[in-house]
Amino acid sequence: MTDFVLVRHGETVWHADNRYAGRTDVPLTELGRRQAAELGTWAAGQHLDAVLCSPLSRARQTAEPAAAALGLAPRVDERLYEVDFGRGDGLTRAEMAEAFPEALAAFLTDPVAHHLPGGEHPAAAAARAVDCLRETARKLPDGRVLVVAHSTLLRLVLCELLGIPLAHYRQVFPALHNGALTELRLRDGRASLLRLNAPVR
Figure 1 (tube, rainbow, N blue to C red):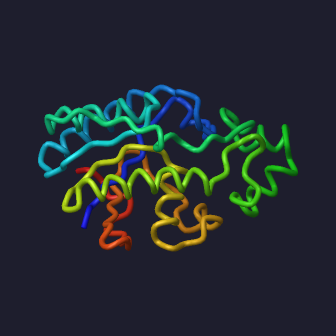
Figure 2 (figure 1 turned 120 degrees about the horizontal axis):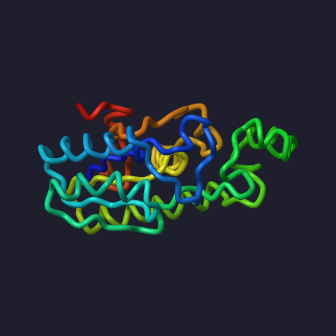
């Protein structure tokens, strides 16, 4: 079995306005940097075999203190990029309602069948990230791995691995908190959710 500790990156400067941050490289806030440091303090007392992260700076900067505490180099994997939100990237929901109201309404009804205009299909995003985790599990069959990535991507991964319809990711997992720990176990191809949004302290 392989255990994955899934962590959403620290708070960013778009957090206060609840802007959709997809592929835009948004910086961490001071709180986000503290959350990264707290994750590093937590990691120092853990047995972790690898640290994986998204290429976006908010994920890399969140992962770096943990990797340093473990004496590991963080492994950046493009399959852990956040979902591309297309025309929705950088917008609030209110701004989307002005720019493309019908598409937003369809998205809120079924975010998979009607993903945001010009954006990535959520099923494709889930597939690439799950491929990353399964490949890591094959390489570290008895390992424990920290994965620092993004809210929507990680919620899709949880649904895909736990057999939950992807269209329900917003209802089943309404939020992954910045810097919190969500632990997932892969054993013989099956997944179990061990913890959700656990604090690092």
